[in-house]
Length: 195
Image 1 (cartoon, helix red, strand yellow):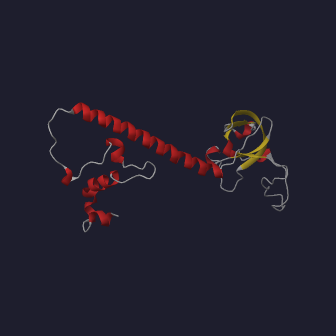
Image 2 (tube, helix red, strand yellow):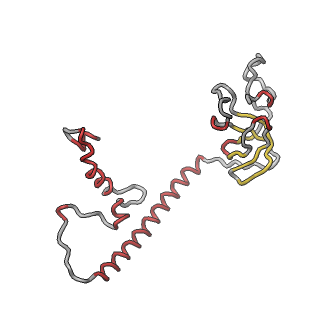
Image 3 (cartoon, rainbow, N blue to C red):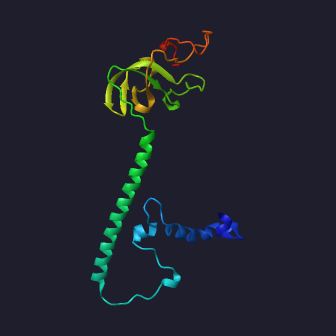
């Protein structure tokens, strides 16, 4: 890229920035269907060969009215285009989205991200899913309060992405001293938490 813009003098790349900026602002954006210049100034600026002296006639009101109409039309078309692109993106995202809704009293597993662990207690080898715990309050479809033991010493409010349904046959994690295989089911040891 730098070679294309600067040619044989790559150390003088900063001198080519105005031309690069002008080229970028003159390029049509896929989401809006317009150039950044057209969105801000309603038209692409004239190049050096297009510049001519403007007439000094006082027909400002007609031109101003026409410009205002063009701006309103442009804004409406860009708004419609952005809404269409947003709807298209939403449909694509919703195809992969899984709706999870929990009720008060449901047993859930909580997934603890690295940031949730108290400082100095996180280890890559320790389990990150704990439970089962009861849902004590539903804030909305995206946030829940879970009854965590006081010994965990972290916030008990979770985003729905960090909560999973609890299944009785679910293997949580194995105690390193148990000698059992990872396929055997074992009860949760809440007292064995690292904090």
